[in-house]
Length: 143
Image (tube, rainbow, N blue to C red; front, side):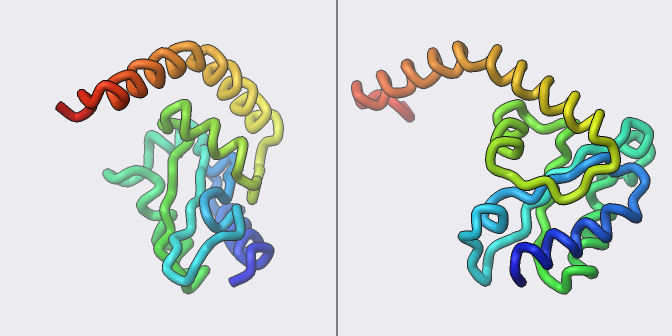
């Protein structure tokens, strides 16, 4: 399925979900490198009430089923942006494509918060990478 049609179909499903505030397509589908065995990666931000009242497995479990049925494709992998690690949130924003937005104000607020947290985290990541590389060079990584 071509990317424009994929984004349109996902957007139609998400528009029927009142708890979804905004969503991104990311991964190989967004990059245009998907093969026939590739999954469909969707990052979704839920409003707090929808996130709390979701099924025992979270609101994403029901949404996966609805998306796979509507797309007649799969598997669909949903990342819940509300609880995603900061590096994943940043990657979604940097490389993903917005596919649905109910609240531009909330999306921008989330975007700003993610960038701020990511920039705060960068010095720690640099230290982690330094010591990881040092252990690899010394041959002590994994021991």
